[in-house]
Image 1 (cartoon, rainbow, N blue to C red):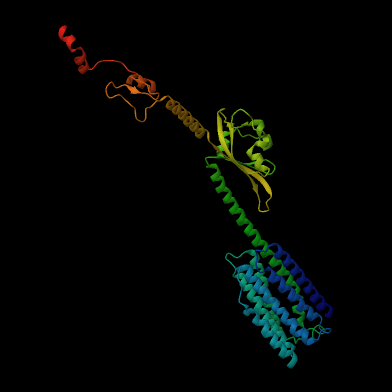
Image 2 (cartoon, rainbow, N blue to C red):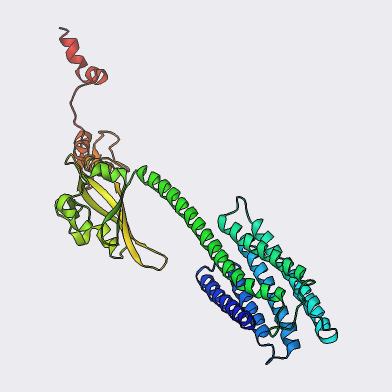
Length: 430
């Protein structure tokens, strides 16, 4: 029986060390999950406490008893704190450490002043039952509906608290003896159950972490799917064409505007084959744009392209002018994983600009043909001749014809007719 107890203790120590390593690995990867390091530290302390139990003999018995048992309860408190952080994301009251502190003081008395192994066994069992039971209750009350892994782990802690209470109840019937030389049945029972409990807790914590991780992954996948749906809807309703490709040049996004404009088929799934079915021209509408000049191709090679004009032909063969912007797509590590190009049809705008330029040219040409007179014009007060810039006097009609588009036809007003031809009219009344 002696060898069985020592073997069980060593096995418990190995289980706790393994559990510590397991938790530290999890904590290193899942830094967003709080409490896992507390579990790891608690298991380390539990292994140290059991090691002190095992070394009773080489280590002074009083030291092994007092500090070994205290370390085990402190370990249970860290596991409780870790569980609170993990399931509730909040730190519990540090009053939980009152239990190992009280145990330390009681063990000092019942070891150094009144050596009583039965009372020590009851104290240890009751304190352990309280902490493990509180841990199980904490996990059970984590959330509703309670995940299966939480029910399993909470059940393990609840069962172990019952085992510890059962151990305390065995003390009056099976008097504890010196450990590990002559263990009682209660001690044998505890040390055979402890490694099983350790294994079950390891499995339970692993299941809790895994189930929580899977739940978050499902939530992330759902959120990404919803975001993808919203993004797709926005892209499909944009007035501009949007085309994107992955790092290999395979097209991944082609919105409705682009599909309506192009004959997009499986014959051109890659940007390297784009020019074989769709021709892209320079702004003159005649010169073909080389593959290396394509905005999306340049973006795929890390270049930011802004306001590049090109000409594309629609399904009906009509030439359209486009203004293209393209950018590389990079991840958080600044690694290139694709490119995207957005092109807006500026054909009508360009035609309007050309029409406006043509109208402006016509107006300017018309203005050149318009002659105007400005300033003071010297005119004779009697004969009404006008002096030109060279100092010569001209008849007013000659002066105006030379400087305007006006033309003159000659007639005679009634007053002048009467003044100059009145006598003639009197002599020839007919």
